[in-house]
Structure formats: structure tokens, C-alpha cells
Image (cartoon, rainbow, N blue to C red; front, top):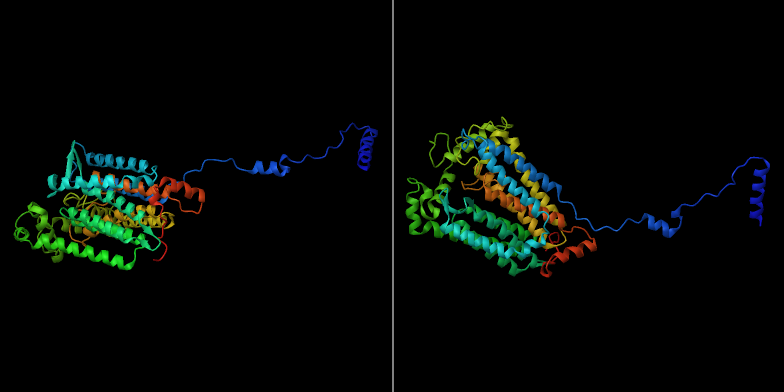
Length: 462
């Protein structure tokens, strides 16, 4: 009653004063004053879970390598340039870079779980192609290592490195245990590496070494026990020694070796004399007074190119040795990079590869599942180990052997395969769960077969 009286008094006063003023109205409470309404207003609409973004660091490194590849390939291709079309070598190279770029775009959109489903099929197919190229393939630089189909040259040795890597990641992912990978998985992986490496050895020692490095790195990611790792190292060493003994101590090999210094080593069967003569020349070294011949031409001109580069280098396109250095655009392109860009440019390219390895290690460490950790680290180690082997050969740290610089050297098969490895790495960085989100973990497990659900124990001491 009191409230009513007060309201009436206010209304009368306003009327008596002769001022037709509207009676005061109590302020309205916002619609969200009600707890239920407020919660409904502040609740975000339910949206479908967005896929995580791809790793910008891996993408940045990949783009930087492509830029270096285009610039330095053009600088290193002066021996191939003719008056009709000076951009011919660069255009052909860019076509393969474009194919590789499309492969990266496509593979980074595919869930990494699909790669394990076809691992055995593609590894088996690439092994058959490797056998065909080894015994019936076209001769390239003194070795039967390529298959020519429809005018295109395919090198199965480059393909099998990636397909076997995915197969190894699949086997290890299925056999990951809290204490490390199982003994059976270690045996399977070692046998696959040795069989594949034995065929690769016929045309190149470095490919076999790279496969062994990749497998050992993947063992370490899986937390392999020290005794198992030592056993694998012993087996690898014994069998490599066995290969060397068979190749170099047989009567046929001795006969070929006796003519290694008088004939073209690449013309001998099995390339035994090529391997041994390269090793002998590496141990003997190169001296300023040595005459330049067909046997030391690559080493001598590669060292000249690096000496010309100095600390900074004259800049891209100013290479003087690219016209004289054999295979400057492929097996020795790092020497042209150093000549153009100096020590700084060579160090920058080296750091790009090492950063790629470091970023892959970061992603692998955070993965909840074992398989994506094996997969991304395997791809990174494959790319980086091949790059380091190439640099070691060019700088004289290792004996001469053909090994392209990944994503930079000329070579269609190598460019496409290494680009696919980048695409697989981006797929892992995009789809592998690295958090404790239960919903995200359930979605990830749905994309994997039941035998691939093993947790990632890489950060747990075995």
C-alpha cells in the first residue's frame, strides 16, 4: 500500500505543476538478466571441430628451399644452356618443382593414417621396380639405375627410400610398447633394410647408408633398448663388411680393379672398380700439383668453386666453375651455391635442413600416437641425411658418390619424392593430436586401424 501511495503522490505532483511529464519508468533489466537467458546468449554456437592448421615452419622451410633451387639451378646449368633457349633447363626444372608442389598440397590434406594402409603394397611395387632397373634398366652415368617409360626417366632407387620408410614406420607403429619397440619389430625392420640396401648397394653405397641411418633414427624415436640398438649396429656392420668382401675380394672384382686406373671405371660390371677407385682417390687426396683428368675433374673443380665463393660470394649467376664442373646442376650443386653465395649462403642452406629436422622432432615429441611420430621423423631424417651426405661429398669429407641435394638438385624423380615426403610431414603436423582433448583423441583413433593405436613413448626413458 505504501508503494502505491508513493506512486500516486508522484503522479499528482507532476500533474499539479502543470508539466505534462511522463511518469518515471523503472529501468528495464537486460534480457540476459535471467540466468538461463544469459547463459544461452553467451554460449557459442556449436561448430564442427576445425582441422588444425598445417605447420607454418615446415611450409616456410620448403618454400625457402624451392627459392634456392630455382635460383641456383639456373646458375649451375650454364653447361646445358644453348643459344636457342637459355631458359630451357630452368623451365624443365620448374615443371618438376610444380609437380612436387602439387604433391605437397594434395598429401597434406590426406590423413596420415591412410599411408599405413598401403605401405606394404607400395613398398613391394617399388622393390620390383628397383629390381627391374638394376638388371634391365637404362644406363645413366655408368650404372643401370633408371626405367624409361614414355620418354620419362624414373629412378626407383629414389622411390623405394620413401616407400620403405613408410613401411618401417608402419611396422614400428604396430609394435610400439611402453618399454620400446618389440624385438620382432626390430628384426623385421633390420631385414627389410638389409634386403633393400643390398639391392641399392649395386648402384650406390650412399643409398644403403641413408636407409640404415633412417632406420636407426626411427629405432631411437621408439625408445629402443641400448642392447638392441648395439645388436642392430653390429649386424649392419657385419653385413656391410660382407658385401665389401664379396665385391672386392672375388677374382672377377680383382680383375676389374686392375684396370681401374686405365679404363673408365663405370664401364666395369657391377661398378666394383668404380667404388674402389673412388675410395682410393679419396684416401690419396687432391694436391695442387696433380694434373686434372677424368678421374679427379669433379673433385678439383668443386674445390675451386668453393674457394671462389669466399665468405659472402659474388652473388647468384656469377659462378665461374659451373661451365666446367660435371654434374654441377645435380650431384655438385652445393659447390655452386657456395661459389655464388659464399660461406654464408652454404651455411644458410645447411641450417634450412637442420631446422626442418628440429621442427619434425618437435612435432614427433608432442604426438600422442607412435605411428605419426615415426612417420614425420623418418621423412625428416631421410631428407636431411641425404642433404648432409651430398654436402659431405662436395666438401671432400666423404668419397665421391652420386647423391642429389634434396629439393634443390636437378632430377625429376628425386624432386617429386622429396616433395611427397614434405607433404607427409605436413599431414602429420596437421592431423596428429598433440593435446589431451578427449574428443580429438577419439577422432584420431577412428582414422587409424586398431593395431596402430599404440601411444608415443619417445619421451619416456626405457
